[in-house]
Length: 259
Image 1 (cartoon, helix red, strand yellow):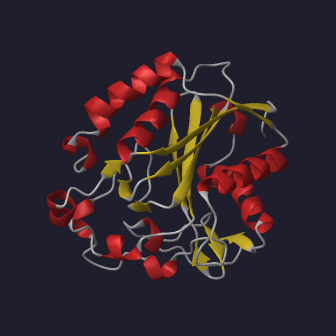
Image 2 (cartoon, rainbow, N blue to C red):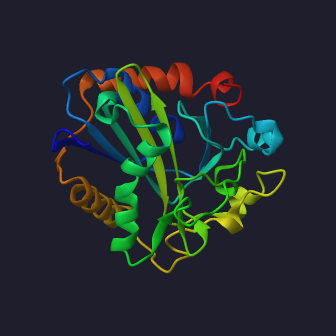
Image 3 (cartoon, rainbow, N blue to C red):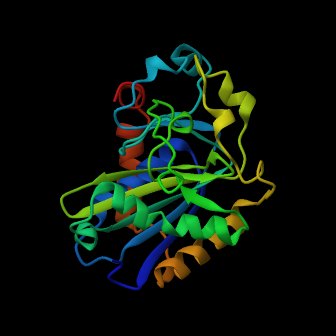
């Protein structure tokens, strides 16, 4: 289904939660017909991100989050509350008509194929929950829930992925957890945060640095889709737009906590 074999690669390194989501939206908003598809890689500080329609009061200690000034940001995509810090995230931006006639779940199956390849390259048997015939589990917390095309290793969910569609574009981003600060996050939830249901690469026995994982992700992506990744940076217009979004949207409590 990949139509072109040349992609624009942007490795942003570690950014704040607000900056990360501002850059993602700036890339999507600035994307024009005929542009190269985009793969972005980036890291996070210890923080929380919320799905576009997440209801925080049901599972999150919002008073503690606010009083202790815990970094948090609301994504423009769907999904639940996701924990960050010690993870590498990716963003894909492609023309929507590349997957014309493909349903949302099938698009996850296709686009997340490189993640299955990544984990297998690292020596793990990784499968989609649906292929393991696991029941779906709805939850406001990403790690505690399970959907058909979540990826499972040794009986535990690893990472999470979410999408956003515009008229002409398909946007998908997701997280690959290297490690996690369990003490930091456990105290932020009013109930089960799902930490016992998740896997990280460190827990699986593969401690790895961001730089090394970035190279492996790129390799798995190139091999899975038979594409070329061309290293690039944000354009001046993308940088300006990202700074504006960070100041006017992603740094504002009315967006991050209330949507």
